[in-house]
Length: 246
Length: 330
Image (cartoon, rainbow over all chains, first blue to last red):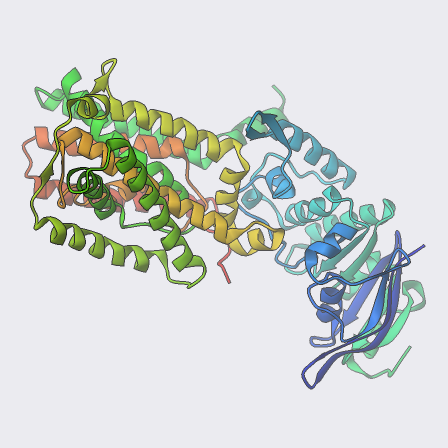
């Protein structure tokens, strides 16, 4: 099922056209690799989907319904979550506290509300189990590896029962072993029927997990094809402009 | 025990616990040192006196812990205590307010002052150091101007006995401080508000993105120190039966020293209420012991300066080694 459809999306910042008539759709359980050079419009597109920006023209359908997000909270409520490159984690808190931040499970004693840590640890443990990650819920994030940190950030999206997860450079600046861990996390999301968009400069990572590849160049969509019908060489050529369109 | 559980237990001893244990040991060593080298240190009377001064500092140090955790600072607390006490006495003596309504007005003043510091920080982007430095000067100056430097005495035995005396062998202010400790300790560990202080200090940008109202959290922390400065001002009046513009001289230093010695990082994110409590007792015990040694009060300040410096050195080494000091705010 098509969960997210972008129809003729354009976005201008003054005289600069960041996105030009982009039409793209996403199915549940599908991983889309979104590629392009710096300034090609990847981030702008993600921010429009996530409700940070409003498109200048074009429409977005989510689960076949037309949607308009004026702030990120509205996109999140629908089930669209973004995991940003900096992961937005608080290093001084535990993995569980990070996952549940602003959504803490509480016990009520009259007017006093107490955080129910044991329940949060239990649920966080299950989330990590679902993601097949060895992250400990009661460990502080500052002690964690890049892969585990990514698991915490992705764990947050599991809590909200996200249907679409947008990952911004999830494998940048982490070690090879941890890259494998993060790619495994993405596969787990896919297996659970979640649609994933991954933005990355690392060609091998994108090809390792993506079902489909979309390439943006100067705000235009120049390719949107199955990963197995493309190759890193072709995508590189599309990004640089050596091949006009595929 | 399997290797895995061993590993887990090892991790349970956190940096903060290490600091508290270390401080507790230091506290016992200092206690032994003064007990064996002076005659009158190890007496109930003297311990009561140490507890009393630790309690006044503690009442402000607990909210100050939250302020530092959220990466802010409030250096206006000393003059704020002096002015609050004076304001309380002025309302009673010059304007014939009752004790109760005077206290209510002074407490309201404390809340509004903290709110002002918070608004200046979050809406006008003035660093709290600057705002509270300005207040530090202004509040002390105004207090001196209004009273021409002379104390204003009040006489009310009931008020004095109730808030300035002892209950069950301990100073009343110590009971109040212990109550406040429990509330702050509980809030810091088990409530969303407490977690939010740590989250804002750990990564303000992330906290904001996730949906925490960072401005409100910071304002709340700053209202805490001002509110408790007002309360301590009133309690000081109960103790000395007068309002005095020179009261609580250098108290901001004792409060911040206690919090930092207790393991709270000046850069935010790290700190515990238990550490702060130990820090208050530690600072009070040192000040008291040095007097027993017959060291000049002015030199006492030098020693305190050295202690706060050493505490920060130890503190920052521990935190750097644990790879803390989270991301900078945008």
